[in-house]
Length: 214
Ligand code: 5GP
Image (cartoon, rainbow, N blue to C red; front, side, top):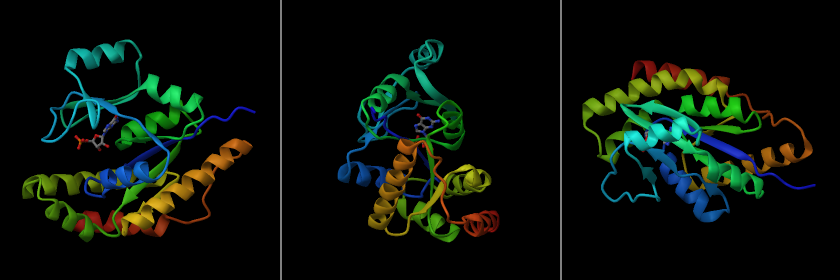
């Protein structure tokens, strides 16, 4: 029987350490990380084709028209989307693919690929999230407050994810993410549905409450 790869979608709060986590897992294990297209301008140090494909609005809209994206969303005035060709090719070749995208896109992917594994990354507490955003030093206090407000809205969708990863120690989080993906890939291979035995309700409730009051 030919083996199809598993599609993993990773979302999480801004400041949860997703970028670092993606880099670490791709460096250590053989995952195919999809590179998104966006209309936002490159930040300092970002390279076209490495962090993103930086497109004009016209180019992006023509990809939408040609059905060349698996999903796309508008996030803070810019388009972001996942090019279809790369993801489909990698999956067909049996590779396990990871997308790092925001929640709306993640839920769209799940509709299109019901077997996709949805992972949500959170720091251990809202206090820690705030600390990381401040420590990162790339945003002013007004933006940090906006991102925390957005995190609070996003926390309402945490229960739609298959697994919540608490990013406390990066190395542990990488190992945990890798083993969950392998478990889900085994289920997919056997034609079973992946379901964790863990109950994330208390964690989700706590994060939702903390984010409301911080
Ligand atoms: P940033 O501008 O900080 O790189 O990304 C902003 C947000 O866009 C992040 O939440 C990131 O996960 C999300 N994002 C990046 N690529 C995609 C994509 O292809 N599709 C969707 N829906 N969101 C994306």
